[in-house]
Structures are given as C-alpha cells and as structure tokens.
Amino acid sequence: MRRRIDPVDLLLHVWGGLVFIFLFLPIVMIVIYSFNVGRLMVAWQGFGLNAYHAAIADPGIRAAIGVSLRAGVGASLVATILGTLAGVALARRPGPWVPLFVGILGLTLVTPEIVDAVSLLPWFVWLGTDAHVTVFNNGLIRLIVGHSLFATAVVTFIVRARIAGLDESLEEAAADLYAPPWNRFRQITLPLLMPAVLAGALMSFTLSLDDTIISAFVQVSGSTPWPVYIFSALRAALRPQIAAMSTLMLGLTLLAISMVAVVLRRSGESSTQIAGTLAGGGV
Amino acid sequence: MSQAVATPPRAAQQAPQRTRRRVPSFVLALPAWVWLLGFFLAPVSLVIWYSFGRKPSLFATHSNDVLSFDRYKESMDPAYLPTFVNTLRVGIVGTTLCLLIALPFAYWLAVKIPARWRGLLLGLVLVPFWTNFLVRTLGWSIILSPQGWVSTTLQAIGLRDAPLSVLYTRGAVQLGVVYNYLPLMILPIYVAFERIEPSLREASRDLGANRWRTMLQITLPLARPGIVAGLLLVFIPLMGDYITATVLGGAKGNMVGQLVASQFQTAQNWALGSAMAVILMTFIGVTVAVLALIFRSASAIARSRRGFTLDEAEVTR
Image 1: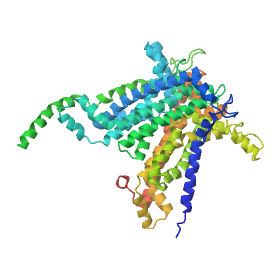
Image 2: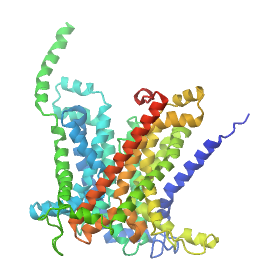
Image 3: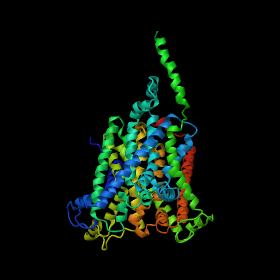
Image 4: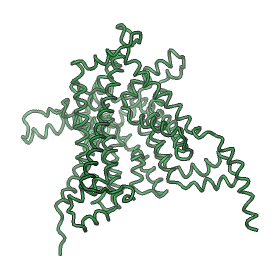
C-alpha cells in the first residue's frame, strides 16, 4: 500500500518553499550583483571581483565600516552590562519598582525608532552646547548611546527569562560557603547566565550594525556608520562596491551567529529556544 | 553529632544575609534606570514639550514662548493628513499580509517538518533578519528596477511590452514592508505552534473534529499569544519606518516617518516635526488598543458560545 500525499500537506510544502524563495530573493540578488564589474550596481556588465577590491580599498567605505563596528561593540557592551544587571535585579530582587521599570522597558520597545531619533537629536544638541557636556558632541558616543536604548530593554528581558528558569539553590549554596556577593555573582550566577548574556550581546551588536534611522539623525560628520553611508549613496549612484561590502558583512554576521548558536547548543538549549533567544527572547 | 556539625554554618550564614538585605532591591537595576531616564524618557518628554511650541523665524528651529495646539492642527492640514492615512493603510495592510503569509508557513515549519530539520530551517528564516535592513531593501530595488533582469526577461518573453514600472509606487513600498517585517511575524507564531502538544490535535481528531475544526478551536486559540506578539512586532516598527518608503517609494513613498524626518532635517521646523511624531505615537497606541479590544471581545464571544475554554497554562508545556 503506497501512502497518498495529503493535498493540504502538499499545499503547505509548496507554500513553505515559496516563502523561502521570497525571503531569500533580494539577498541572493545582492550577492549576485556584488560580482558585477559595471560601474552601476543595477546595470549588469559582467562577472568579476572588481567590486570587492574597490570596496576594500575605498577609504570612505572602510571608515564607515570602522565606525559601525566600534559603535556596535560600544552599544553592545553598554546594553549587555546594564541589561544583565537589570535582568538579575528583576528576577531576583523584585520590589514595588518592578511594574514601573518593566513599563519603561516596554515603552522603549514599542516606541518607533523615528521618535527615538528625533528626540535624541535635540537632546544631544542641548547637552553638548547648552549644558556643555561636550562628550555628546562626539559622534561615536552619540551612536553608542542611541543604539543602546532598545538593546538594553532586549537584553534585560532575555536575561530575566533565563534567570527565572534557574534554580536559586546554587547561589544560596555559594552564600552558605561564605562567597562574597561579587564572587558569587562572577563564579556562579554569571556562568549560568552566559547563554543569555551572549545572545543579548550578539543581538545588541547586530541591532546596532543594522540601525539606520537613529544613526542618520545623531551622527556628526566624520562618524558616518555603514547603513547611513549606503543611505546617502542612494541619492548619488549605487555602485557594486556597496553590494560587495554588504556580502562580506553578511558572511561575517552569519559566522558570528553560528558560533553563538553552537555555544548555546553546547549548553543544552533546543533549536527553538536558540532561535527564540537570537530573535530577541521575549517571544 | 551531625546536627552539631550542620548548625554552625547556618548560624553564621544569618549575618551576611542580613547585610545583603540592607542593599535596596533596585540597586542592580539602577544603572539601567538612569540610562533610560536620561536618554529615553527625558528626550521623548522634550519632544512632547516642543510639540506645543512654534518655529519663530526662518533661522530658529523651535521656540516655546507661546504654547498652543497649533502644530497639531497644522499636522492635520490637507497637505499632511493624506500621509497619515496612507501610513495607517500601509501599516494595516502590511501587518495583515504578514499574518496571512506567516500563519501557514509557521504551522508548516512547526508541525509538518521533522524536528531535526526545524532548527536549520528556522536559522534560514533568520538569515534575512540578520542581513542589513537597508541592503535587503536594495535587493528589492534591483529586482523591481525597470532596467533590472526581471523587467528585461518579462519583455524578452513577451509578457510585458514596456519596462517594469513597480519601483517608486505604493505597491513597491507595500511589498517592501511585508518583506522586511515578515520574519518578525513568523518567529513568535512558530514558537507558539511548536509549544502545542501534538497529542491535543490527536485528541481533537479522535473526538471526531475534522482538521478545520481542530485548527479553529484548538490550534489557533492556543497560538494566540504568539499571534498577538507577531502583530505588535510587525505593526509598531512598520508604522515608523521611513527607510523602506524612501528606497522603494521615492518621492511617492508618503510615510509619516519621512514627514517627521524632513521636518527635522530639511525644513528645520522642530515644533511641527515633534507634533507629527506625537501624533504618530498616538495613532499606533490607538490602533493597538482597538485591536486589543477586538481580540478580547472576539474571544469572549467564542467562549460564551462554546461554553468552555482551553486553559493555556494547563495544556501548553
């Protein structure tokens, strides 16, 4: 007896395939057009690696990538430290302040980026010129602060979710064995939290790399990050160099993500949990 | 004997515990508090304050010497109102399309795909999510471009006699936002479907329900938290998006995000831009509240008709 294929199942399989094609079509386009030897990205002239050589040699592109990477590391450090501490506090030391704090974190998550962007611009201008806190005239600092807001909320929720699932008895045992609070945190709590902290750090880093709207508003000349560089290139002509550098960046991001996924898998998370944390926890 | 050995550490433990308790509970969260207060609440409040001001002269960006609601009236001017309406339409249509695409897809991934392949396929869904937002959108502008290969192929095989004219239309923006936010809809719905025990669907079938009834009365109600999360995750950023609209819609993109940005960047009218930003937030808040109301009353009606509900906590893992 041969099993008949259920028509609904067949439709679902076709749908799944179509959605994957839809999801990958533009990305495949960028990768293909990064090998375009023509002067304009959209007009295909022939196959070659010229764009990659040109992209790596271009000082403007290199500076933009440099700014993006530095802002990403900075924002991810700030968000991971603040978010981890806040997540631990939320899960382990609840108090009457919790609802208000969670409310503010939620507000950060639901505020559209454009509102954050237009709020931060006058705020930085005021801090830097009227209040004479001159660090806020530094473009990199502005980017780090701007990128760290949403990310802090994300890290807090990821860490809180992780710590809520942990047994507190290990920490209590450490306390019983006279470990001072800091050692207890460093030697017991932090290693247990590592998967969440890593996922949060990676998440903040990529959010920062991806951010265009806030960056476009708060950047000062000389600290243009990569997405804003592409965005302003739109007004002139799009060269294949942009596709080439984007392909390289995609390769790097995928490498970093697979590494984190491997770490998470070693610590015994299921694939769904891993995807959940990588995609921002909370869900 | 063992009692005597066990007692001293417990007694000694009381002392450090008491000093630990003296640290106020929110101290660990304090840095995050201060950070969000200083760089989120304060600046957003400043923008709300600006929205009641005015642009005093050609060279000043804002002034709050005269407070009024005039900027709000100005934002609702016939010159700007269509943009707000258009944004809301793109937002609602886009979110609905994402839901319609994601529901069967997430179900397929969570139920029809063997467990060992799910991780890999889910990772593939995440790849666009990890590709730069702007770059993905540029990918679409290659596809839709009148000089691109799709356009030339369509003309070559005779399906079109003129170059493709989708780029820089509202249709292109709609396609772009659906594409850009689709993974945010798929993920939470997938997670919700995946958590539902297969035995529940089997039980429903054993009790004589056909597949549609099982879907409507068992699977979808249980996946509701995921669906709600997906709707929020897509709708909110979509409403504020102006990148997709600028890349794919050009001058005709017409999203509120573009309006707000241009008031701050080109027109230098911070008061008007602030009022528009506040209106955008209000639009989002009201739409979300209306949706929540619809969802709640719909499930209340369903509950009263069925006479019982599945308690989520009891049946999910």
